[in-house]
Image (cartoon, rainbow, N blue to C red; front, side, top):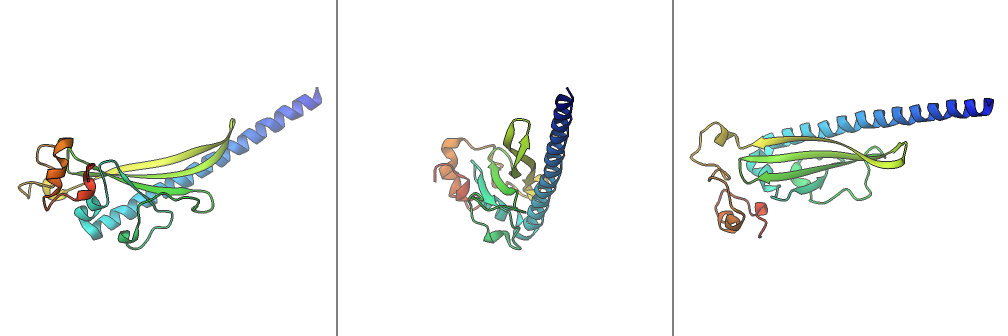
Amino acid sequence: IMTLVLTAIVSVIISAIRAADVSQKRARATFLSQEGLEWLRGQRQVIGWTGLANMSGVNGISYCINDLPADIATLLPGDCGSSLLADVYKRKLTLTVDLGSTAVKALVDVEWSGQTGGGNVPLSAKVTTDFYYWEAQAGRTSGSPLSSGGLAESSCDAYCKSKFYPKSWCSNK
């Protein structure tokens, strides 16, 4: 009976340690995802909304941002592969243009593996925000790249030819 009690106590302690580890990694991952979003906000100030929009797509374009470069223009689309941040995390940025508005949606997703009661499982911490075309929001322009009443999927190619609409947004390139 003493062995059974000791086994139960050790089991509870191990579960508590795993839960604390997952909580600690989740807190760090949340910080890293927020850091990525703040970095993107700063980059948006440098390259502007149009520069940010040119890096996005209707189906989302992903970038590995394990290392935050001084210049967003140096980022290349793609996933992080086996590259890890702090030997634990993968930090990915996905930029998606919203054809029905003047917004670029940004998602920063930090992934890692954590041990839970069911073994090693993938975990993530995500933060999102929308970046808007300010001039259109303030009513200072007659129209923004996306404010022509919404785009039908079929009219995307024709609209892409306009000087305001980056071709990377169209699904039919």
